[in-house]
Image (cartoon, rainbow, N blue to C red; front, side):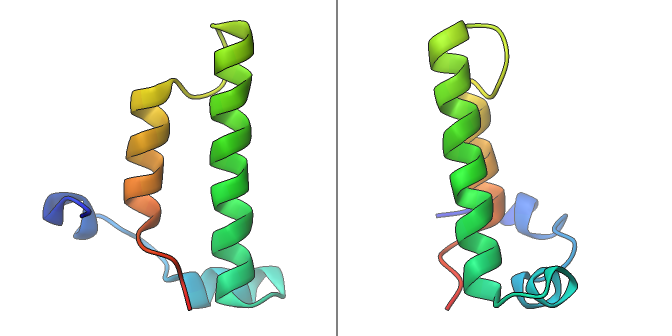
Length: 68
């Protein structure tokens, strides 16, 4: 469950992000989740760049539940 303190710092909704990108909110959320996974994999492979496990977990938490 996302941390309530993080929820209050969120910016645009997934619907707003999707509109800005010319896609649905679901597609925008899925693209962001793929980016997080790619960053975590990059860190796993290199140990230097990308998001470590804690950073990836925080990014997923900030992204919130699946947009529908």
